[in-house]
Image (cartoon, rainbow, N blue to C red; front, side, top):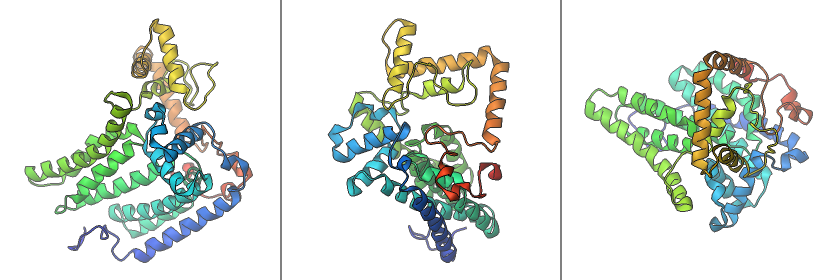
Amino acid sequence: MLKEKRGIFKLGLGGDNIVCLAIFVTAALVRFAYFLQIYKVDIFNIAILDSEYYNILASKLAVSKSALPALFIYVHPLYIFFLSSIYSIFGVNISIVYIIQFIMGSFACVLIYLIATKVYNKTAAVIAAGISIFYLPFIFYEGQILSASLEAFILLIMVYFSILSYQQKEWPFYAFMTGLCGGLFLLVRANGVVFAPLIGMAIGFNRRLFREKFKWVVLFFMGLAISVAVDIGYNYKATGRVFFLPPYGGQNFYIGNNPEADGFNQPLFLNYIQEPFSEPEYYRREVSKILGKEVSLTESSDYWFSQGIKFILQSPFKYASLLIRKTLLFINSYEICDNIHYYFIKNFSALMRSPLFSFIFVV
């Protein structure tokens, strides 16, 4: 539990400042060693596929907000704002992005320590932080122009505030901050919206009086609403329509849940060449051909989602087999990659070739 003194700089650090500093410095040194191994390699100085998509939009936004294309609504926007902020200050410099993401990753290791301290004990916290410092997938994705590092960082902040919200019965500020961070997380990973009601209920559950439960839950959803409202407001300004989730969730759902799905991210059409900005429009055109009329991006997404549900309902045994296959792919030691190949990078980094912690160890 927290002591009587509270404030923005009293968020549970207590006497652990030296330990937290040691964790941060060690994590930063490991990541700096990785950066020195990769920063001159050509593949790390260009953006391809999803990275190119983020890079193009962030570069435009850094130059002029009016130059931002309407296709901005196709992606979760927070990472683009994050990138564009860096580009506005330092210019379009991918290495600077990596450095900042490595710094965030080092702070993430500290957050893991603080969370484990709250939930378990200091021994478990040191072990968890030690694993995170040398966890190779963390380091790998922090060195990519992808939203994964920002997602992990915001998620850990949200989890930390949610634990404080659950444990602290007197200061509802934590409930608001949990919601605010939860809303920010949705701007980089919208499917996390399914967990929002559960977190809100958990925060309210630990209050004794109904009015206290109500107050804490309302504060959580107020924080959530502020973050989400910013995205909805931009979408309305750009398109004249009110929506939050990007209009490609349905096609992504169907890619993973269709009669030909094998657990990997395979495009539906063999003649489709993945390029920035083209994917949602390509799938929309396919739906228009199938239905014999022009459809919007939202209607296209709805169509593909319905086709995925149709497959699940009509072929339950095949779907169950697919789920088993996905589970086995998830828990094994092979890292499935969709942009820069995880194992290709080992050719350039001794750190990535070292027998440090990987996902199979965590499992």
